[in-house]
Amino acid sequence: MSTKTALRAVRGFAIGAGLLLAPLAMAAGRAPTPKECAAHPTDPAIKGGCIVINRKLGNCMACHVIAGTTMDGNIGPALRNLRTRFPNKHALCEQVYDPTIAVPHTAMPPFGKDHILTKAQIREVVDFLWTL
Image 1 (cartoon, rainbow, N blue to C red):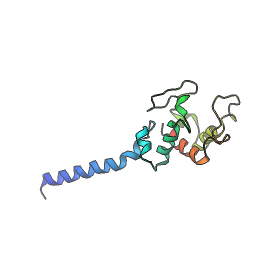
Image 2: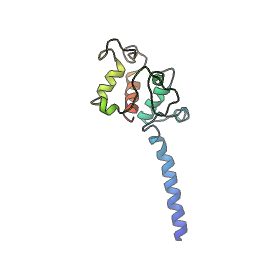
Image 3: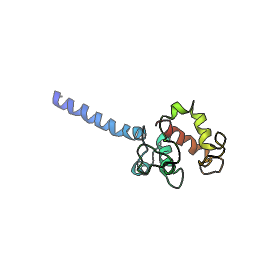
Image 4: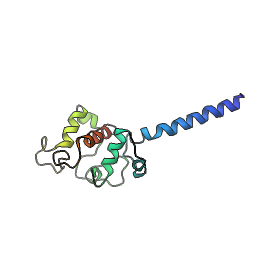
């Protein structure tokens, strides 16, 4: 095999590997696009990002600024640097499940307590939020 052919093979492999890994990294640091969600992701963080942008489920961008969304809400705090605001994912899950425990008169709905999202969906949302 010539050097030129070997380089083409390596470049082709790298491009192919990048395409395979791309869906796993798309939600990191930003919300996934509707097109990415339509691809039926399996990664919990990406699935959580799809819940966040779904107007029938999380609709989080209606109240929060979230990187990667076009509709920025101004009711709640921006959803970024959550690892510095919550000690662990469990605490963030509790906040999403029932924010009235920490702030009794919050405008944020208790997504778990009111059965808006399942516990599994809340865990996926938290997996996504943890990437921001």
